[in-house]
Image (cartoon, rainbow, N blue to C red; front, side, top):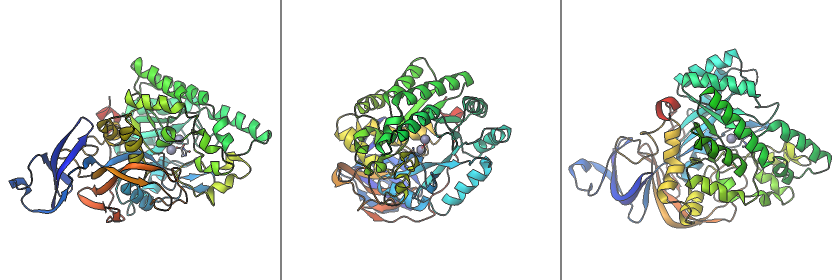
Length: 466
Ligand code: URP
Ligand code: ZN
Ligand code: ZN
């Protein structure tokens, strides 16, 4: 089946032009002027007039946690509800984190995540692998996962007793990944030091959610970021710092890149648009508890500079939603027991358009780069996703850059009972969203289907990045 999008401004990371986009089956067939009426367009069944709109590649969120077990509960969105919400917000691919639980194999973790996603995801998806144990058996398994298209491994210097790995374990995983061609992703905060300060705060009666933001010092993120980048340099492996929040950490990434290290990083909308002040509202602050925490507002300026200068290559969401009325309440009286994570998979594209493009901080091409093209490049999907070009998957969004709407839990599609951005008015929204040539969102109406999404076997960092 063919469809044609006419007269939109096609925005790719490397430039924009008014053009038509011809879709044949699951792929983009042609991009150019005057395709309507051309021989190529013979047999077109549906035409979309995109005059005054952008046509952008479907966005890619490389950091989500559907159904993540955390703090005695599970992140609420399933692959069905989470990918559906993502699609309403213009995101047509997610890369979620499969989890190897302590004492279990990587295979068991990966199989569990395939079981959660297959038959449920409404858009395409891939997996990274969280490693909780590094030992001879799991190291050997890493190579097999890479061969199966699960090409990145996340390790943590945070969360002692849960996901934490010591420097030796991290270094061994890095050495293995240097061999197999994959990418190391690091949650870089000094979890050991944080636990000391957190225990001291609680002993002093400072138990409100606000103190979650206070005890996780920015310098603890800077220290761990520098440490893991140095370890990666020693191992000869590319390293990607996830959810970078503090200028202290950004400075370490910048210095590393300036000396030629294979260091990359993402930040998230919550660090660009929210701040520690949002946590200073009694237990309501629990809505904003995530790790790393929200920072004092002056860090935001540095993060925006990091995006402009490409020291930060990607904005992902770290979508990890917990209901406020039930799940977040686990931490009443002790902020350490609040499940860590925020909802956001639906809001990223619009927030970045509003705060970035409309706000005059980045161009519309850079916007497409950080939400779609760079994620595809960094994570082995280049040429398939993240670009409007012949041969690429027809994951396309007709985006209205002028539509104003208000973000609210009353209208969002994420399965969570609050929004971090409640009442915020944003300019820009997705009118039509296509996943592999199929319209899945049409002017606010759901047209997609549970199980439509396919698992993406991704290329390795060695094949696409370095
Ligand atoms: O608070 C967060 N970020 N929760 C999800 C787990 C993680 O560290 O990414
Ligand atoms: Zn993390
Ligand atoms: Zn995360």
